[in-house]
Length: 410
Image 1 (tube, rainbow, N blue to C red):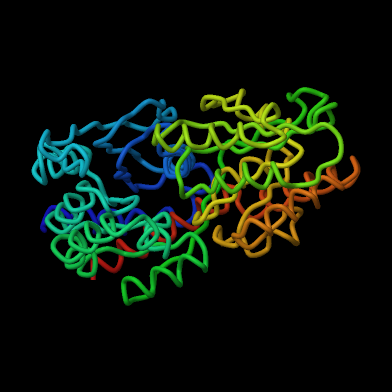
Image 2 (image 1 turned 60 degrees about the horizontal axis):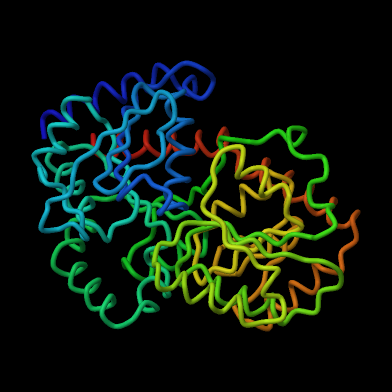
């Protein structure tokens, strides 16, 4: 504990000297380690969120690292250290770090970490991070990323439900409730976390974007092509609602030429095959394409080419693809499960999670004229850049980290 308290005294003294300077160019003494399950294309939402904030923090903090026990197939941003801890061979699915608490504690001490920021909590890395934070006497933040939503807890079958209940009561509950500071992304997630944990999250800070594409760099044709394009971008998993999107596309009365692009990794091969079989069964079978995941300029170009991006998830904490599509000038159809309560007033389309609602939304956007589509795209982009820019959200994180350090010090 002495190690942690000495570091926190130094941190708070330096914070008082710096004030808000870190957000204006002068780096703050925060040394932040993000603990994630994996850093891969298969974990698109969480990876994208962590990648964006770590990239911004690396420009404003003394040191930033990402610790992962699962697959890593994406490069970390410049200035961010990637630390890999292989999972123990008997816990490959739970991904408990092979070197346990001692391994992570050594990393914390070697890099003089002042804050641990844990993302999700159903894997073994969470247990290790909680123990290490308590031993080192440093604050730890838990971002649940939708893990407490009703669908995540109860919508994946009784086997997963029992496993999660056992894990929560045997390992996680005591560790989390005794030490971690809770962070919610949206007011909707705040309500879910309050109900599950029995206490209020200390902060509501939205996901944000550090990478903002230049619209002038895109294909001038954009969404105004002969075949209007609907795009789904994300992993092929039941939570994403792709099956409902395929059904709605088959049944919606859309005038003219349309295509649906389903783009993302096949997380569950059997489920992906079900989707492909479903796509072949309707009148529009030839208008549906399945494509592999794309990134960087290819991803931005794909989003910009869409008439509308569709995010029909059963549960989603904002859904980074909603923000990314908006900054590419594409409005999205998404569900109330995303927590984007102002989306309809900001150019997008917000629906209940029912097949009829999705069919109606597809027909609605199909009736837009070119000027309406362009206006909504510009409205979405303006809204996201104003509310979800990393410069404003990043400052919120720096202030939150400082408050936590002060609380631990006391």
